[in-house]
Image: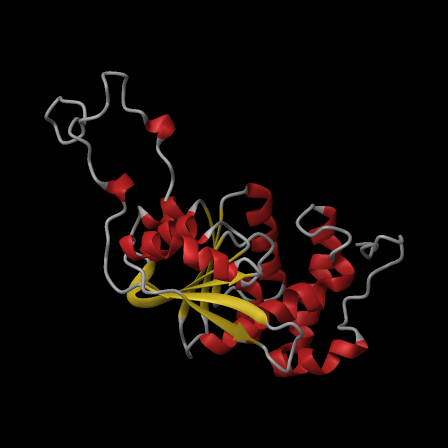
Length: 262
């Protein structure tokens, strides 16, 4: 497979650049060769398939691999992790590479992405600890109970929607770890009440990787403190067999097209 090209058209090396070599060793340890193999997949096949932008390839270690790997500091030993909207495997595959003690489920709705994830898991020899599920988080939550210790998400959705999708996949007492950027403080202020209604704790903003990567990664941590049935799962009057429309319908039908997710 040909190497990925940068914006200048030059091949992109998969090894960490010299200025990040020590940081890469700190977060991946003796698994660094495996992380490099994953980087090679991202800057070649990942770019060709449109999962990673060509301009991102030269920054794959700084903006993606190390940025995601430092999240491992917040995850307990032997945890069951569900990565929602996994995309190219960020942060799910990165965590599985850095932490072989974790059991990781990658949840991704798009077929081309799940195909890449499945091939990457096999190529990297992660089959024993990583599974790939094609579907939306809501669909996975409506099946057999998941009860993850930790649910992760990176650049998926605003916190209110993210909590609505991810908290039902989390065991009570488990945590949602959402990788966020500069919007974290604003999102927490805007959505804390919605998160509380969904059974989540007061969101806490954490900084991961200080002294390893600059700037450190920003993570919003939400504990699932109670089990709340999402509104979409509650039966309507008609579904319950009364034959009556819910109040406020105005006689215009179910109104499902106007219902907001999460």
